[in-house]
Length: 310
Image (cartoon, rainbow, N blue to C red; front, top):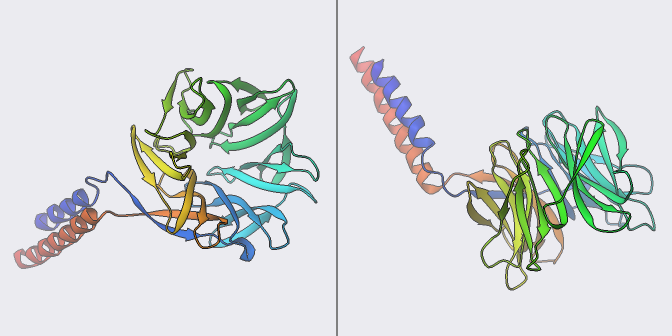
């Protein structure tokens, strides 16, 4: 039996070693038959939220859970986008009223939807929520200027890393990600820590970098725009940045990541030049597959040895 245990342990070790780059299996989401829209957020259960547009032009939020879709609308005659979801099923997002270009924020707790507006603001967008119920987003002040915010219970705090600050995601450690307009005239991503410090995220050669989502492991996703004006998604793990491009896409935007490494976003389809919501599931690297096969072979050999020894 010791031979069996050693072989199985070796198999597990090999299976988890050396994953420095993840590729993805991409699935286009089709809420209620529509493949036009955006996937904004994903929780650790794999529930996805976003927005879809019907053939008649109606814009609604959606929840994808357990293989089925639920349509979400803030109220009648509004355009709705659900931007974030936590592991408890609480959701946040934003909506547009007819003939009004200024969005309003909302939160959904226990199936009940309520407005979320920052005081003395022209508009509010709620974009991310963690398992503690803390909400982040952006608002525009009555005198102009966009600012990031965090709502914690009944209080809120304005956060400005630079001009035009947006907060897009937050994890349970309180690390928040977003973007700001630098003095160099370019947008930069950042991760803002609970102690008030922040780290800038800039993809080399990019004209824009936007950090959009962060998981419980501190892995960050977002998108950047290259010198040719093409958008690419990115994954930042410990400062190492990997480009993400969806299959057959003219541009890729990644907005959310869960603790299993699954990502969501939108891509510009090469065939129709239309934005489509997608779910990206990590696929193992070839080296990991080979390692797993070797490990299983050793496990089988160990099992056979154990039987002979017995």
